[in-house]
Length: 344
Ligand code: KG4
Ligand code: ZN
Image 1 (tube, rainbow, N blue to C red):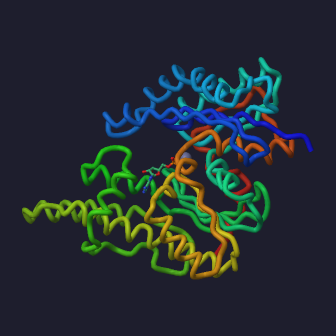
Image 2 (cartoon, helix red, strand yellow):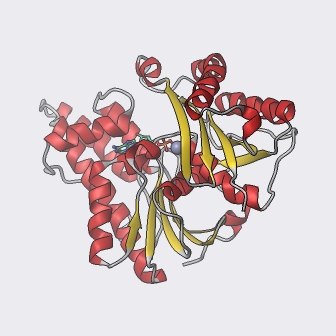
């Protein structure tokens, strides 16, 4: 079969990225321009600034990726873009840019879901084999997903309130740590000890998650310490929060492996950049004799490589979009999956 080159575009949050990937698993070249330093000044992503910066930078990012790949747009077989979910103004820049490229160069357009991107980033390590259990942990998602085949997602469990990454970001704010929250909580946690008593969320036989009670407990702990005139032991509190949050993730993953007799686990999403989580999942999968894949760190945070990977099965199915494609801030997962959430 002829090789397929897909040009991926990702602008859903604060990274402008373009990548060219061969056959869904071989990275040819990628450029990621992060706006992190700019948003750090404001303590979080400012949507208006994010979309303006994507607009200013996207052409340069495309040119850089093409130069590294030694290719032209006319050499690729399709243009794939993250159409959902994310910041609407940011997504729009990528979607409109992709539509122009598709029209001008007469290439098929592929609308790719951001979370599918995180999942398919694992293809860069090892081709996905089904069935598999995907642990999705990001700023907007916390799910255990069973995949019987390409693009067949069945949600086994999801969060009842906050996403895990969101809770890390909020806890970082409460502890006065700079944006981005997750990595900074992890840095503090590495220096501390688990000495704060925090509630164990979802201590039951369900596969759903909850993080808002834990987050509130961290906020209350800070207030209580302050009221007593004590200094908050930030390193310890970060450590206790991290341990309790990931203990829940590990417990639920273990439960899902047992309930569904899973033989393969993959991890996806920005939170999988946590060294602590990576170690804990490795330990779990080792103990349970389950095959584990986690993308290398640079593919855990947002990038266009994962989008071009996830677009490959769509290309094979000729699942193409047309120029009426719209960005969607909140396309939760794929519509079918919401209805197919497995009842416990
Ligand atoms: O996947 P991602 O880049 O954006 C979304 O698609 O949501 O994930 C970003 C999330 C943020 O909430 C960030 O705080 C979290 O991932 N994160 C971490 C770590 N690195 C990133 N959370 C905990 N520990 C980390 N080391
Ligand atoms: Zn992401």
